[in-house]
Amino acid sequence: TTQAEVGMYSLAIALVSIFTFISTLGLRDGATRYISMLRGGGNEEKTKAIVASSLQIGIVGSLTSLLILYLVADFISGRIFNLPDLAEPLKVISFSIPFAVLSSILIAIFRGYGIIKPRVYFQDLARPLIFLILTSILFVAGLPFISLLYAYLSSIVIVSIVLSTFAYKKLSI
Image (cartoon, rainbow, N blue to C red):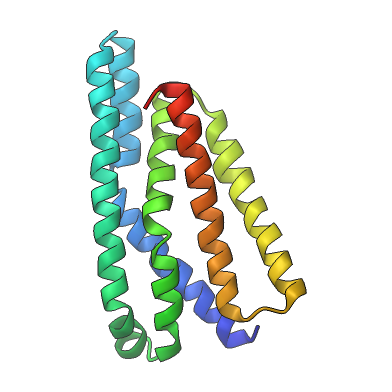
């Protein structure tokens, strides 16, 4: 991996982070706040509606962000950053947006229910650990730079799927 590739990786991660942030704008804090308020008032029906709405809005917003970033990746890389090689990394990790948003909203929902551990277990420990393991395997195998992006994407997808399964079982979402 060259210095230029590391720079492209960092830039691609930064751009995807911006699109992910825009996709969740207000949803995380809003979901946590309203779920905790409604649960405190004993209104379980409205709580479930907030959970469902948060997930639906987040999924639609994140899929829209994915589509926009994927379609403008060539323009951003060539015209804005003058790095045509940035297009492929942007396109690859743009697919992480819906999974990152889903995980973020699910963690916010857990916080609304007063459950903090999923953030620590899934976001703070599992995702970096999976990424480290996959990156180590790629390094030992001598695979090309683009594999690093697939490792990043895979770590987010795996954690999102496991977290979704956990949320379904724990909260009946």
